[in-house]
Length: 233
Ligand code: IMP
Ligand code: MG
Image (tube, rainbow, N blue to C red):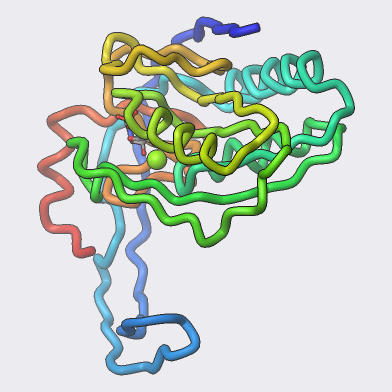
């Protein structure tokens, strides 16, 4: 049964101390097996968040843990001990995936699919999907998970792709549902937290591929965006 839950909003101001890193990287093109090191780049500011960004914490670690507990219980009620194939939309659902599967007791298979629409920034762009890490889901019960339901286009599009692979069933679960942003009629079957229309990072969610490793969900304000202007990607 579709279920949603509200979030407790804990407003705390924190400062991220972001240590500058030195990185050596190999330029490459084509498949991994053909990769050769063509050049190396060193930069002390490469791909690091600005040193002083103030994030408002929307969901702390404890709230997130309780939310994932609730989702695991709902899934146990729905699937009991029947095998479940979880298809996780990369990269944002990575952290949720890791936390969720360790709370499930039925046999679980993990399949990955990559969908990108933000192209590194905040505005939704053209959706690209890569499915080379998909398992065979024919006749399987499938749960598609994603980090956030914003316009809803990603979840609807990927659900449609999965249905073409003849699964026994497809349900959807999202960590966050951004209220008032949906442009589709479908809704996720499971929502861990409803959030207001803010740009959030952490717990897998990124801005410019940064912040995914934060253990909490924080709001990135418009005024903080300018501070990212000089970041290389
Ligand atoms: P949708 O297709 O508009 O629902 O967008 C879904 C995707 O956009 C998510 O999987 C995220 O990668 C990205 N996204 C949407 N809102 C946010 C946000 O507030 N922070 C980070 N990523 C977001
Ligand atoms: Mg995503």
